[in-house]
Image 1 (cartoon, helix red, strand yellow):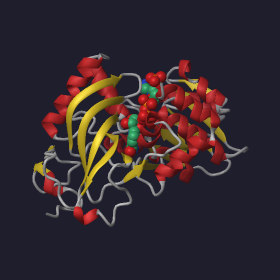
Image 2 (cartoon, rainbow, N blue to C red; image 1 turned 45 degrees about the horizontal axis):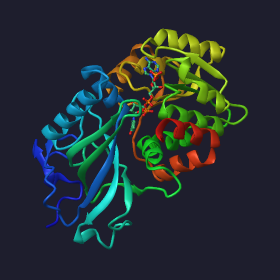
Image 3 (cartoon, protein in one colour; image 1 turned 180 degrees about the vertical axis):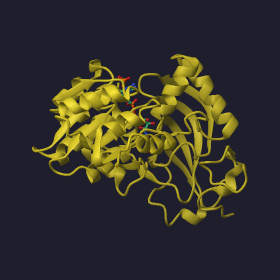
Length: 345
Ligand code: NAP
């Protein structure tokens, strides 16, 4: 039995849409289509915007967060946060490969993999939530998931702890896109710079901007900026990115009014579009990696203040993004130490 390569055969409502925008998908694990892969899941990485929203809604309480995750997955057949619209990703062991994929798949039964497509489209059945890590957005589970034929995944590297690889791969698109966008001599503003993707982007931006470039790291609290200093980032300022005018002022001070060639938004909260747009010079680029970004707010907001900036939606997928992200962590002793201290215990 061959299903649709994008997984539309598992869409329950509304009919005719792809699994990501669907409200509910079929997460029955007793039937495996010939072009699906079944995974025994051991850990979820809930998307940061989604995890933050859940904690805001139910409180930073392990049991309540677990209940909320279970409720969403039972209702929708996937971990698709109805408020943020975002998902996350998972790691697990390949349990079965459908007949039609046996020769094509670059993995075999027993391999440990990370999915590189969102949990917001991945059929997921959670049997038990064993532990919610409130500080890292990671959730240990007994669960099963399905990867569709078009799904993207990566074998877990043998030289890294699983939790470290999960954390890095969750945001793999961000450092890869930063490497593509930043040119020698660029001024780069990073909003949310001390977070997971923020730190990776800061390292990559510094590398690609080179000695004539400038990195302006904008953090919510300087408490979390020690790691940035270890990466050699010197222009660090505390801001609230929901305050666009204050953020613009800070970037202006650091750049003598020139503003940024590239602004990277990696926050985990809503309403930061205008801080990013105002921090960027005309004809510059804003890269919205944050899942809390509103297209409407960005488009109408930029128009409203007369800013001629290019705005890029943070596509989670890029060619070789997993390898680029893992290599970035291998390359920098400081980055690896930081990620290990936060994600491996
Ligand atoms: P993270 O580690 O939680 O980092 C988010 C950062 O935002 C934190 O450093 C946080 O600072 C900062 N922040 C929160 N409120 C702020 C405010 N008012 N002003 C300034 N900074 C603020 O998140 P992540 O895992 O790197 O993810 C970053 C974003 O990327 C999230 O929105 C996530 O959903 C998104 N994402 C997108 C994709 C994609 O495919 N495009 C994939 C994965 C993740 P404090 O901790 O000090 O508050």
